[in-house]
Image 1 (cartoon, rainbow, N blue to C red):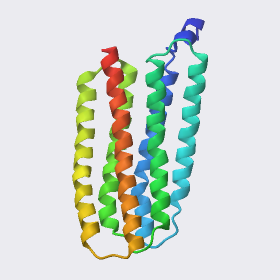
Image 2 (image 1 turned 180 degrees about the vertical axis):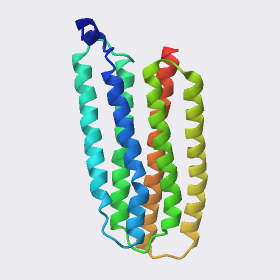
Image 3 (image 1 turned 30 degrees about the vertical axis):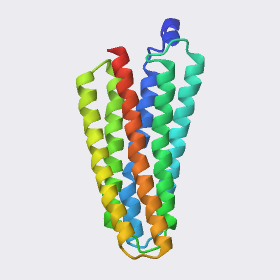
Length: 212
């Protein structure tokens, strides 16, 4: 590799790392159905270990990006945008892990089918973010990025509407207080995962608009 390529970051390593981080976010969110199956079957929540491993791997990827930025004079996208996108991507598996921990310790029984709907929305949102991040490597593709971002917004809007129904159900049905508090936290964390994905998608769109 030439010195020039090292200086301007054209070897693709930053894109490799961003894509790897987005893949970790998607992988972590994709584990939620498995955890819900364990809870429904009243089995040990072994998936929590997978959450922790995935989040730790993503943390290392984030650190590699920050270290690379400290050693590179010119980056393929603006340094501030890369830092912001790195933080946004890492917050997805971090929030997923928090949701997993909350699910594991919450009082039983839990309305698994209802939670699964929100968890599936979070899984879909993270998968779209992975696709959006992959578009950065090949230069501006606003049409594709906008299409993916619109899909992400649709997921967020649908999840928001579902959340209103869930909260109405939570307030109207007589449940023990500890169950109500647990469900409120679970629904809130599901919403946050989708919000984190939306934030990452918005940053991809910002980069696309700047480079188009």
